[in-house]
Image 1: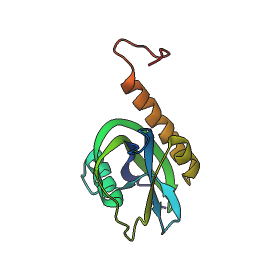
Image 2: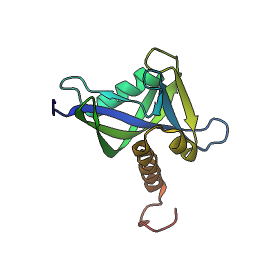
Image 3: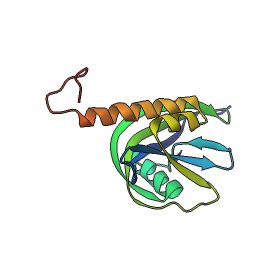
Image 4: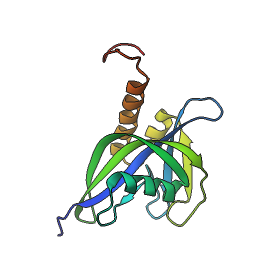
Length: 149
């Protein structure tokens, strides 16, 4: 067994709904695994993790994104090797999706619907981390944790 950690990066991609203005999270469907997840992928040798995360978003969703804060990393095993995926919050700023062999569908869902649709429960924790990050950004200056925005 090779215990070299596979390094990967991705984003929890979000936008404001063009219809309601509510928060929507982008999930991708990968036909190879028949799963729903956040856009992510392996890093190239020497590739900056944030640059890799934004590259993966563009490749898998067709969207360019404005990165926000780093979210908790996710650790798991795949193919008998440990894997570490670093994630960032990222706002979709432009683009459109075109199906491809790696990702055949995307969905823009409310946070609750995204959490329910994700195949891996660990990915739902990233939705919660995104919500905490966005809530913190919307807090008025001088507000403390526990204060209402």
